[in-house]
Each structure stands twice: as structure tokens, then as C-alpha cells.
Length: 341
Ligand SMILES: NC(=O)c1ccc[n+]([C@@H]2O[C@H](COP(=O)([O-])OP(=O)(O)OC[C@H]3O[C@@H](n4cnc5c(N)ncnc54)[C@H](OP(=O)(O)O)[C@@H]3O)[C@@H](O)[C@H]2O)c1
Image 1 (cartoon, rainbow, N blue to C red):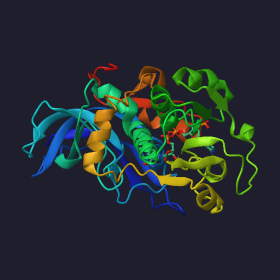
Image 2 (cartoon, rainbow, N blue to C red):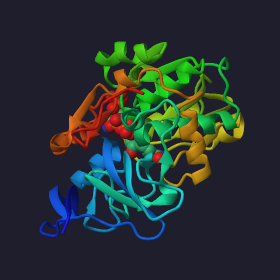
Image 3 (cartoon, rainbow, N blue to C red):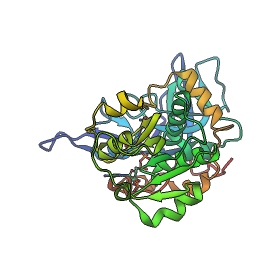
Image 4 (cartoon, rainbow, N blue to C red):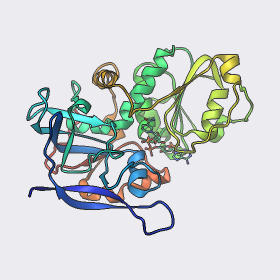
């Protein structure tokens, strides 16, 4: 029987509460059934959700055991769907990988053909995973902010959790579109990095002077929030009339204590951003845009570290501790070439 190497996550019932155990295992090579495609995985990435899943710090998996990795890029090696052929290059991001289906931390992945996205123009198997779910989600947030009226020139746009994966890419994409970006980060030592990505100002959450009032001086034309909690409440209270705040993450907490005042007195929009449920047509369109008008300019700076598959277990801690900067790409296939485009 042919086997493959996979990073598997099991529920660990031995303790008092919810826990997982995760590590490398040899599992049978799946064969695609009708409507499925088998890919040789080239690269994957490490998203916050991957760290939660692999450590058990969050209940991400809906069944056990599963292979981790919420996204990957690779080459089709066998297809039971007429749209995909051996040698085609593709990526999958979200779609329930490492939640209800085996994910990308494996030599091979067998997935529904409907989930595959062709490599966007000008991108490589490496660069799409330097973007990964983080980059796709940043693009989705910008898409929704602009659908709700955000345009360059209206005022500053805040990005919180700025030094993380989503934050870094959001700054890069917003700045390239002509927005005046303020990076909000707890890491003063990363100010130079954030400015190099295009932030005109770098502030710590403390410098925002979050007062907890229902309405603060209207300052932000828009915002992308990866942190949640008090920071999100503070952004809502300080957003200009008609402005929008895109809520992506909860790195700082899931609770949101606010009032209706920003909504009813300033018409502020709170936009929910959920990447995994994005309809396929929009998913394809946004990935195409990531190769076109939403093309990142600083991917090599954002993802300077491509680690070997074997190093994966050591790489989750930084994300869980909030010390991560930028993106970490994982080279699953040792022969896959790291090329920015
Ligand atoms: N909605 C979706 O579809 C979707 C998709 C992808 C990610 N997400 C979520 O978006 C968030 C960011 O993901 P990511 O991949 O960018 O993670 P990441 O690389 O780990 O970055 C998270 C950043 O948030 C800040 N942070 C971390 N812990 C914090 C805390 N306790 N209080 C305040 N700030 C804290 C840090 O930035 P600074 O030190 O610069 O402040 C950290 O670098 C996560 O919550 C993730 O689950 C959601």
C-alpha cells in the first residue's frame, strides 16, 4: 500500500478538558473518487487557526483525527473531474480543510475539484502560500470595505494586529491602492517593518487613547480589525460618518462591548469577514485580483521564512503568543522551488 507523510491531529481524551495530540504519521495515499482531485502538495502556510488547531488552544476540528493545514498549493497528479488535469497548478484555501476534511500538511491532498483555484496570473506555488488564507482574507476585507464606499482620500484607515499575517498583507494591499494606512501594533520594534510595507503611521493600542465613550472624535475612514475586544469597540466609536470597520479576527478576545451609537448616529458599518464560507465565484475573482489590481508588493518581506515540513511542530508557538511577524510558509515538498512569482 502506498503511504504519505501527514501532520495528524487527534483528540486526546486522557485529560480533564479538551486537548489534542498532533504529530507526523504515515497514512494511506487517498485515491480521488468522482469529482475529486489528488495533488502533490508543494507549500502550505501557518495561519492563526492552524496554531489553534494543532495545539488544541481552540476547537477548530469538527471531527478527529484529521490532517492539519487550512491551505496549500500544489500540482494535480490524478483527477476524477474533467476540469482538472495532471500537471495543473492550483491552490485551496479554507473550504473546511483541517476542520471537516484533511488539510494541506501532507505530501498529497485529495480534495473536491470545486474547491480548487487555479494559480492566479503572475503567482507561483510559493507566493500563493505566502499570501494564503491571511492574504485572501485581507483582500476580502478590502473588497467589502470598498463595496461599502471606502475610497482613498477619505481619511486614515486603521489596521490592527498589524504585524501579523493578515495585518501585514492588509497594509501592503491598502497602501498600494493609495490609502493612508495607520498600523496599530503592540510591537514598537516592528515600526520600521510596518512603514516599509506602506504604513504612514504606527501606533500602539495605548496611543489610541481608547476612552470607552459611545462616540469618540471621528478619525477613521475605515478599519481592518484582527484583534477584536476593546480595540474593535474603540475603532467603531472613532469611525467617521458612513465609514466601515471590517472585523476579521479575535487575536485579543472574542467579546465585543459597544453601543449602537456609532451605527445610529454616524451610520458606521460593521462588516463581518468570514473567508471560509466565501462563494466560489467570489473566491476565484479575489484570487485573480491578488494577481492584478490587489497584487502585493512586499511578499518576500512579509514571508521571509520558508520552513521545512519537519520544522512545522516548532512554529505554532509564536502565533499563539502573539509574537509572530508576517507569514510563515511551509515547504512540504522538499523539491518545491521558493520563487516570488
Ligand atoms: N475571518 C476570517 O476568515 C479569518 C481569516 C484569517 C485569520 N483570521 C483571524 O484573524 C486574526 C489574525 O490572524 P493572523 O493569521 O494574522 O494571525 P497572526 O499572524 O498570529 O497575527 C495576529 C496579530 O494580532 C496581534 N495580537 C496577538 N495577540 C494579541 C492580543 N492578545 N491582544 C492584542 N493583539 C494581539 C499581534 O499583532 P501586533 O503585535 O502587531 O499587535 C499578532 O501578530 C486571528 O484572530 C485569526 O483567527 C480570520
